[in-house]
Image 1 (cartoon, rainbow, N blue to C red):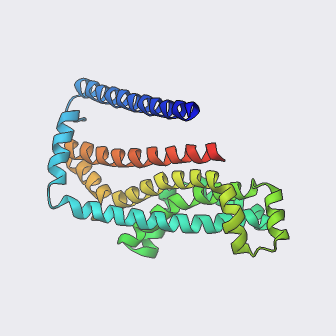
Image 2: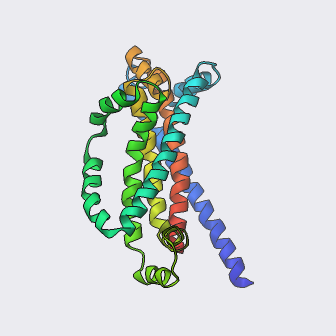
Image 3: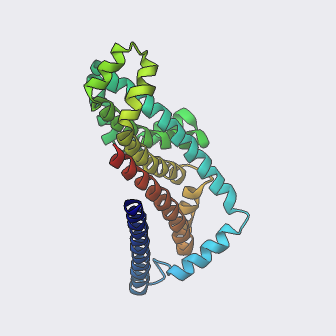
Length: 259
């Protein structure tokens, strides 16, 4: 009973410490933002208060929500494709050693390429609609998921694989019963990285060739030199990405501690 109580108190203290650190970080970032605004001026930067006021007006307007829905639909579909393709290819390359040795350098080479150079090819293949945005987001997110999954499967203890073979498990059973549970912590790291990169790819696609979406609004604000619009959209994207990434990082740490 005493040990359980001590663990509960320690967990509560840890959560309070994390909350305090988060509040301190937010206050520090807002202070730095305000300081930069006072130094640079409103010609290149909007103040925190002005940005929040503009963001509030923006989210209450009817024109904003179609852009947000378009971005989120492209991002969700792109990330779903990245996860499915990344896990499938990663398990295949990790489990089939010869294929992995042949294909891994090619995957790494594609990963090192600036993806912007491939966007004209995607535009020719998919056109200017949502398909190109989904493809560009998927292209950004799928490769890290492949590489992390491949590495995770390779690092599974050989005794587990031998046990599966002794039990005469089929390849799908081997994946679901042995490989996936054993490799889950490292796979989840790949999913976390893939989330961020898919979001970046989707927004970049909207910035280059799109008539809808948050990326389009951002480029429109740059073209019109609307500093408040640029800052408001950037703030929304940062808040969304930071919130989800923090949650995924917390889950990532828990999975690695259990592993």
